[in-house]
Amino acid sequence: MQTRPLFAAALALALTTGPLMAENRVDASRPDAPELAAPGSYAVGVRTLTLTDPDRPDVLASTEALVRGPRVLMAEFWYPAAEGTVPGGTYDTILRDGVTPVTLHGQAARAAEASNAGPFPLVVISHGYPGNRVLMAHLGEHLASHGYAVVALDHTDSTYADQAAFGSTLFNRPLDQAFAIDAMASDSGLAGLVNTESVGVIGYSMGGYGALIFSGVGLVPAVLDSPFAPPQGLLAAHVAGSDSHEALPDPRVRAAVAIGPWGMNYGMWDATGLAGLRVPTMIVAGSMDTTSGYAPMRAIFEGAIGADRHLLTFENAGHNAAAPIPAPAESHAMSEVLGWAPFAHYADPVWDTVRMNEIAQHFILAFLDQRVRGIAERGAYLELIDSANDGVWSVEDGVATDEHSYWAGFGEGTAVGLRFETRLQGQ
Image (cartoon, rainbow, N blue to C red; front, side, top):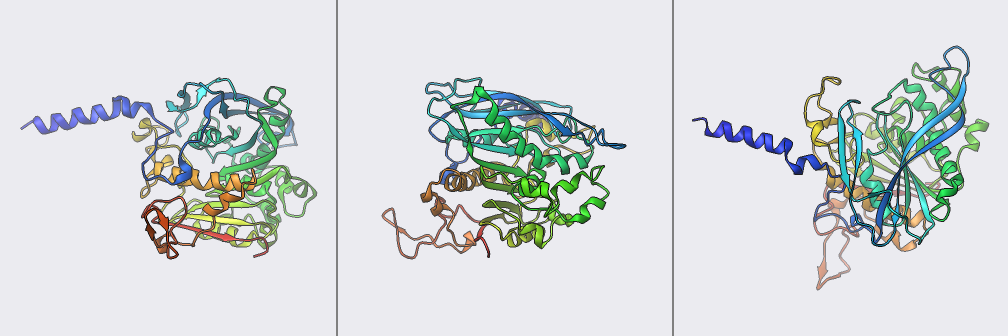
């Protein structure tokens, strides 16, 4: 009578302590992944960097008067590695609860020798609130394997370990992204490895908010009266039409990706602010996102008429669509700090995380290759019928017929539940 309960207990213990669970792979894959989700030809190296802006307003210290000082940002840097690099390495980090240690495993080899085939275009990755620099490690490794130099920031006051007043994130996020480009450009140790004259910026949630502001989308003046605005009127720097905001967009940035961008759901932008977009942009959204709101994200897509833009929609996905790493094994247990299992911070209740990540890797690589590298042929992966469900698969002897309208790069039946829409500048 006790055999089944004892077996179940033993199985549960094996699943939570065994090597498959303990590895916490960021580079997991599926056989039904779209074409451009496959790893590129480069081995991948990774280093941890410290980037210091010597003079920035200190939001947390400026309650009575404006205080300035250095702002220190830790960063993870992925890059194409030299031929012969043995793949594999780890990331020592913490969970969403801010205390539980976690080791992640991926393809990147720590401190590997860099490829001499550079310089490689720079991509900046910006996490949510809270988050950290390895939340999108899978994307950093993937882009580096395809010949990009990728820097992902720990946004101070906005990480699992140091989450602080939201006003700091509102003010600092686009400035951190801008500073990262200058810091990578000025580092003599990266000469010949990083090309900062052709840059992409990717942001998730609050990182998406920052990427939009950095790309020209200005805030409404009313944000200065918001209860979560930073002190000393600091958000005025990002208000549409202000001299500081007009000067913020960087001509070196050729493409922006905003995944689940927060802000429109709180009225941070109006038609004037949205129209200020200057950079070709891809928005990635879940149709059931209750954090940023799907309708508000669609409004960004429709209203940001100043540049070409795309909207990739995961039907029935929530706010975690296409950004976080697969949930670490340690996240499955209830957290005493949070009162809920951190698993919900990483996973989606409908979509498989690896599936979403590989779809995002496919589209983001196509978009960056087209806009940052100028590879016109990548446009074939972005010129699609709006709803993948309406696509017709018609292939004879390996050749598409005139009736074939299925999404490029996807196998038969593998694009179900996705939408991809495009608006050109001015539309």
